[in-house]
Length: 184
Image 1 (tube, helix red, strand yellow):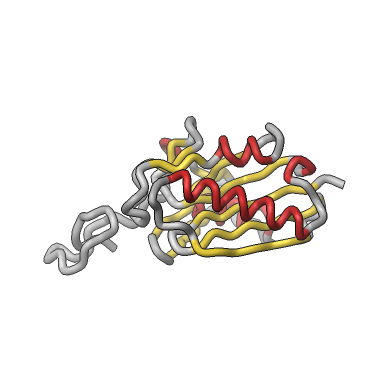
Image 2 (cartoon, rainbow, N blue to C red):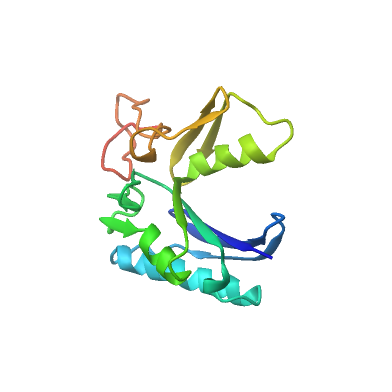
């Protein structure tokens, strides 16, 4: 049987799951996301959690057929990284694809914006399968995934649903993690 892993990198929490080929959860884990001192700390925590959930499932990471990382942005999909995340002020860059691919022995490792991953799940794995939808996520940050005519939109570098930095308070009474003011 094939096994797969999913990793959710959030500004507050890091989650991972291992599932079998029938999409049944075999193991899951959660821990706080390191806030720095650099992207390497986040990468190490992500791989450590992946190894932990694999061990709980009785697997080695190299037993996985593939893995995917869902992350806050802004993403650089070509590089498989997060660049200048607003919610982790101490961190300039986090490599997502490379450390996960290495941990699973060079197998496929995919990267998606977290809200895009949400729309993929809703679009393809719910009943009924909506052709047109917006998946809005509100947590440490705000983002959206979009499907139109059954196609999941990714946009430039996977950031099509970046809705969190619209100014809704022109008085600027709150400061965003990106240092802008008045953002939603």
